[in-house]
Each structure stands twice: as structure tokens, then as C-alpha cells.
Image: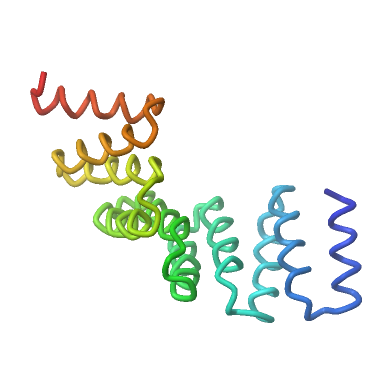
Length: 171
């Protein structure tokens, strides 16, 4: 990573307004676990170009990793405002809400992710987990079943489906 970081530094030295170099620097710093410095690099890139949804997504991701869930949600909001069909940003937004135990908002975000990418079993599985927390068991069962249809090898979805069916006395 040090060679890559050096290259990004050189690019920035040559053109301090080259946002892709700041973005790359942020990514390398993130990989090195230097989260504060990575956020600062992403912020600099966003200052230069605030119209790139992937930049906002990258910032949201690192804010999520540092458990700054409200800030992560704000970054994901910017990402989906710029690219409304950005399924993974909707999904990560939902996961940030779930970490805050805001399950209804999580489900709403997962629904958007699913709308734009209905064939991602992980989206359905996470939706099911949040629905369980809202005591919406029938919908959770349906979500787990859909996750399994997409990926029959998803043992966690099978496990959660089994728990839900058992709990609903559907033997």
C-alpha cells in the first residue's frame, strides 16, 4: 500500500484538484486502517466533486465501519440522491439503520435495494432479519424464502427460516 499511497501523493502534488487521486488516497488509507485520514481524503475529493455517487458511497462505508451510523446514512443519502438506482448504497443505508435499531427505516431501505437488484439474496436475508425485529414474521419468512431461492446454499437464510417456521409452529 505504501507505493500506492506515494503515487497518490505525487498525483495530488501535481494537481491538488484531481479528485480521483484524493479518492484513491482515501481508499488506500482505509485499507491501512487509518480511518480518520481516509475520511479527510474522501472529504477533500467530495469538496472537489460532490456529484460522484461512488465517492459518497465510499465515505458512507468508512463511516459505517467507524460506527458513525448517522453520518454514514447522510453519506448514503447523498449517494442515492445522485444515483437513485444505487442498490448497494440503499442496502448499506439499511444496514446503518439496523445498527441503530431503526428497523422500519432499515426495511424501507432494503426494499429500495431490492427494487433495483431483486436477485441479491443478501438483500432479502437482511430484510428478513429486520422484519423479525418488527414482529412481521410472515414477511420475514417470505424474505428468507426468497433469499434461499436466489442462493440455495445460504445456510444462514435456511437457519433463520427454520427458526421462524418453528416459532410460527409451522412444522
